Amino acid sequence: MTSTAKDRAAQASDGRCNNPRNRSSRPFGRPSVLGDVNVTDDVKHHRAPDESSGRRRHEDKRIGTQRHTARTAPILSLQRLRWWQMLLPWLLAGLLLPQGARAERSFSLDSGDEIVYERWAGGDAARVLLLPADEGFTENEMAFGQALAAEGLDVVYPRLHDSYFLTPGAFSLSAVPTADLVAFLAHIDDGERPLVLVANQRVAVIALQLVDAYQRHVSDRRPAGLVLLSPYLEASAPIPGAPIVFHAAAQRSNLPLALFQPSSSSRMYYLADTIAALESGGSPVYARIEHDTRDAYHIWPEQITAHEAVQRKRLPADIAAVLPLLIASEAAPLPSVSAGAPGARRNTVFALPQAIADMPAAPAFHLTDLNGRAWTVDDLRQHVVLLNFWATWCPPCVEELPALMRLRARMPQADFTIVSIDVGEDQATIERFLHDHGIALGYPVLVDSEGDTVKRWHITGFPTTFITDRRGRLRYGLIGAINWDSDEVVALIEQLLDE
Image (cartoon, rainbow, N blue to C red; front, side, top):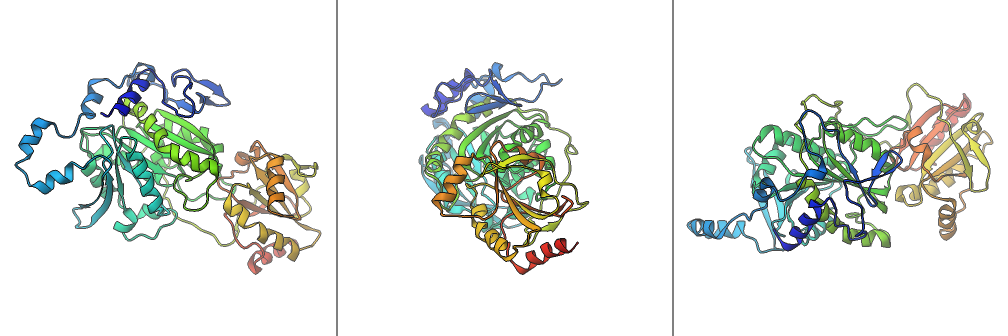
């Protein structure tokens, strides 16, 4: 184990995480309380209740146990090297990469196919399987992998889109057979050091499915845990106005988990629900809020904020600092294979608002607009209303503003109106954004600075837009940005006006 890893292990043994932004963080074992989530300053500690398995509490765990000492031993001792010298030189060269070196390799499956992967030999503290994002941000992810290796971690990055000829996009990696990933995980799990998986957004479900299947098929090994970055754990593509149903893999999770949740995200409002779903299978969960950052900021190819750029550089060290906690924590017994709600994931992208079944009444709200006028849901009645939930930090939300303004100009009827609700920001932030960009929307902006409407309206992504009828019922809904002044959208609205 490198000196850096030893330092982190010593810090984990007294219940502290080496947080470079807050050296004075309280121990994980003594959380304070914020709402319904336990908080230890920047880091939040959650633990599933102990059951008859007699699992020890986190405070009693120490990294320096025989099990963890054995797992962090070097791959090859000098004595073993003398024996291995009888093998071909290329085998030695492949196993013993200099620290920081990068190598491209391939793993042959029984089917004859190959998984091509990159490896950065960073050190013996742990081996990290960095799963790629659905969107295929390959270059940024490789830079992220290299930064993790600089923290003393041995990093493996499988190029799954290239290996399976997949087009990047939401849920694209669902096409990779779990059996292939299990075989690949067994290939890179040398059993000599802890193995941790790192996954982002939708790929978090794939990571959870993988470690579940791996434990059921490789009985003598078990990953030390997972790091989930802004995980999307729903069973299928979200439906506007419908509650989240968590994937069965999330509810069967039994390994220690570190969850990094950006604050500028719709998933932030469901953090407690996400933790509860993960804990239901027995996983100890350590959750940290990444303030003023957005989903996938660490690999996002487009422009990010100055604060996100700083945090992008810090994230690899933050992940490395929490790994000793995962390694020191005990996994729960593997749950029944039938545990959790079933669900098939799919990629569903709609170009038009979709009809909402049963036409439920619009949920209540009490908000104030930028001009100081108070609004309730009753103000939506007697009109056909396009209600848009958005935030200034959300690029698709901003991109669709001109289309909404054009729709308002195209449909000036008195009985049709557009109302927007900005979520999670204060009035000064919204007004500064509109002023700096020279935007005059021409329709009301309601301020929901506390995000009270999110769970009541089942908002799972931004932007989310509903169209209500004169009776205040939800008739159409859409998650995502579209061309709102298109003929097709106008026809939907006119149909409601004619009712």
